[in-house]
Length: 320
Ligand SMILES: Cc1cc2nc3c(=O)[nH]c(=O)nc-3n(C[C@H](O)[C@H](O)[C@H](O)COP(=O)(O)OP(=O)(O)OC[C@H]3O[C@@H](n4cnc5c(N)ncnc54)[C@H](O)[C@@H]3O)c2cc1C
Image 1: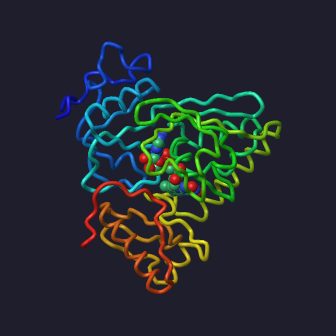
Image 2 (image 1 turned 135 degrees about the vertical axis):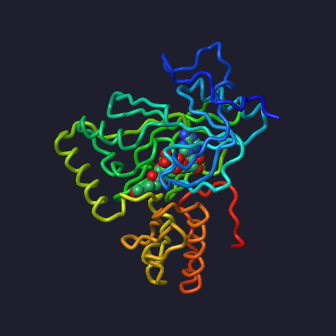
């Protein structure tokens, strides 16, 4: 049995000073049965059994400690831009990091950001200073924490090119400073995927001294290029599959005739076949079935197993 109440919390942890009143126990602002679809860019997924939005590292630790004391699993949510959450929802505690915000410009072109800070903000702040190194990040709708975990990247650059150190809480809420080589980065991979570690923030090394107007122009150019080539206006998770070394995933999906194919309310994009779109009140199950279909067809024709880049969370029925 858990000790958290079944009611909406009496205190918002972020009211007033930006942190929970010390007299209020963490269990009083953990909510139950919160729908997760609004917190994902796919706009699908069931409810979180338990849910919270800490506003500080202290509150984050309290949430992790509560889950540990209750013996329940924890799922971290950034901007939900690379998540497919099951229609059945998620067991345990879902921690949304969106209130863990803050950016600090440090000496020598270093920039620190809290885990819940949108990557887009970081890219804009850096560009405004004339600091190079994050022009690629402008169109990625994730948080700093999610970008570290996923080693997000674009335009032949990625987090692993700029990350100096990430601050991590382990299962026992011990804080660690991990350097780039500790994170075992690869293409859209890091050792944090599938681990029980929580990113609280990261420091990046950028190149200071550039012309702000020029860096901002380049950043905007990258955004425009994206808006012109990808279906940004519809709910998706960006690229569903990692690109195999041989051929781009989108091209392979196109070759097997699935461009535009629909299951329920989900559709493989006609514009970019590595995107699945929530066209019309899709369920997570619709999207999951399209993912499996694309994998099957591509494997049959090309003997290539497409590997999802999207993180698939919760239970899915694989018999349908
Ligand atoms: C339109 C669109 C375009 C996209 N384009 C790109 C692109 O060009 N390049 C690219 O790489 N990606 C792209 N993506 C995918 C996505 O934006 C990135 O993978 C992003 O880094 C995910 O960040 P997030 O905060 O949304 O993480 P989420 O999707 O919320 O989570 C991703 C994973 O990280 C974990 N996680 C999140 N925060 C933390 C934390 N603080 N501590 C520990 N674990 C955490 C989650 O549990 C999950 O396993 C795109 C997505 C969309 C919707």
